[in-house]
Image (cartoon, rainbow, N blue to C red; front, top):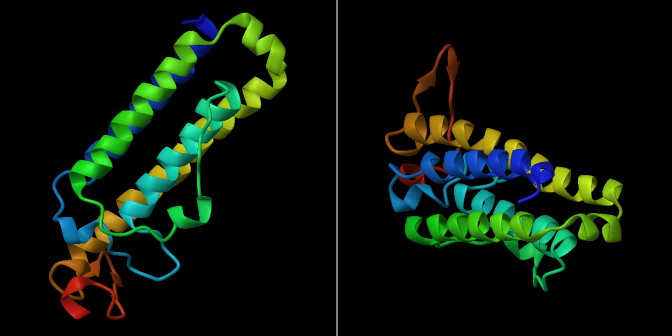
Length: 166
């Protein structure tokens, strides 16, 4: 792997590992739960970010043929924890392979500036999406599984969206 990509590869791997571990201890019904219709569920976050990563790194940088229905990524439901873990593992493998095989000629062909933008888009998507996960987990653990509880001094109201109040 080019030294140029080693840092990106390491960052992406760390972010994927954090995402992969974030929902391991939750029940399956927590994966599709959302505290508000405007907030993405864990399933949506994993499906969308892995698809975005395949697109930005696999297709845009690696030239792979990636089929993607972006709007559908925001409506998915019913994935198991195993399926979500598999999506993350597949993204890890795919990204590592593309970065490992990318040559200086590939960078020059795509123009270095474009390649940097492509990788940056792939990487920047993760922290933004990953930062939402802990918020959903806190609300799920405080409200979703046992009813309206307080988080700090703020009262959380599930508005009927948690599995207990559906």
